[in-house]
Figure 1 (tube, helix red, strand yellow):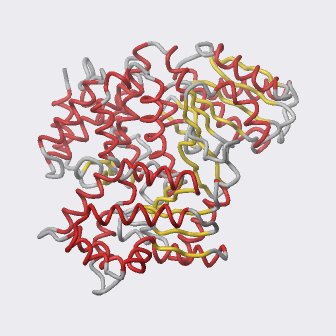
Figure 2 (tube, rainbow, N blue to C red):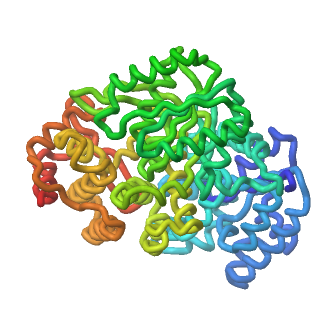
Figure 3 (cartoon, one colour):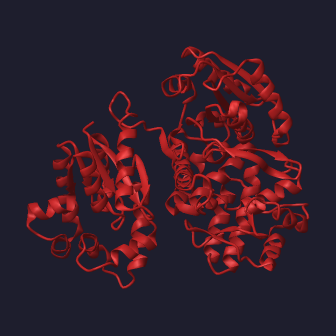
Length: 549
């Protein structure tokens, strides 16, 4: 693998300015493929588009990429459409790391509407020759997003200075260059790298990864001992993890807690503390969670608090926990007054999701999990929603390649949001709560026993979609699109035999309530979630009536 960094992304995301700065920091050469084309042909990009069309330009672009890829120690800024060709993606993947620079559509439009004559304007103008350039940006970016998402690393540049963004590119290179497999390629199971104030950690999603836990723990943590915390439903998977760690020379012990949300409490936590104390657990030892969200939350909180903090590895075995609970460091237990009221942020050393373990889940539990996976697409990635829509049978049947790739992309969205807003202080991470305001209330009112979490989230997403529609943010067709995809994956769309007034009252206890007002996550179009605190009470009542069986 040649030491090159390829910057991909839509025009206006900062590839040229950030690329130059990153090259300077590394002492490398900066290359812009568009500039290379201009130099070799003696013609402006705009003239090539106008006189010869896009087909010729793409051929010149491909030839240029092959040429520059033969050199090393370069930061290479690529054209926004270079990812459209599979051959181009393969060349970049084989000769360096790919860092995708992302930005919101409004940011891109603002940057491209700057002073005439900027590099981005000159390059992008041929593709934005449209009476409505903003609409054109939205369409083009959506078409390319599935290819952009295949980058090894994604960096959002909206709020970053050039130096800050370039520093992140350099950090991506340093991290990923340490995580090459024996064939000098990036581990294909690496879904994302979560970046937090306490460091960074990888999230792996793939088929049959449980056997690799021991070697990964040995390489990244190398603890003197490990304490596997699981529940009675997935004890078999935990035993497999224990055997993998024992094979790597790590003494391991297992604690089996009772299953279910009702055991996510201080009593269970106390039993875990006693168990750790009896085994003389040390701060340098490791806690490993193997199970669903309940296990991850309780064991994660134990890791955050016992001995003032022990390292933890999250190995989720349910779809809901893979998509949500295991990533982001949020750990908690419930009180009788509400869910997750006592907790802490505790980032793991890594997260490993073995998609194969999902094949042993009861059908209802698996179905419940699709809600969180689809939620990520609804809030931030319309192109991923199309993947779920177009591959329903293969994904539901857990076809290894198709299901793993869809889930890997969904997990990548969650990881990126967590990296941007670790402690949920900027409002970005709140977007992940789409559907959760109503869902948590339904769970609380029904004693956490009638609906699985994903089922409640699906119902909650329908409530949020209706409200979005009535507030003029989501079209009837988009509401129907959400309803159709949730139904295709077997998720409930309404609740039954639950008092609507009780649900509304329970909402006031939700953590997302600020100053007595509920902060709703709504959709301003598919793939564009926003937060609103001005939802009229009558619309909430109307939505709850609409959802009643």
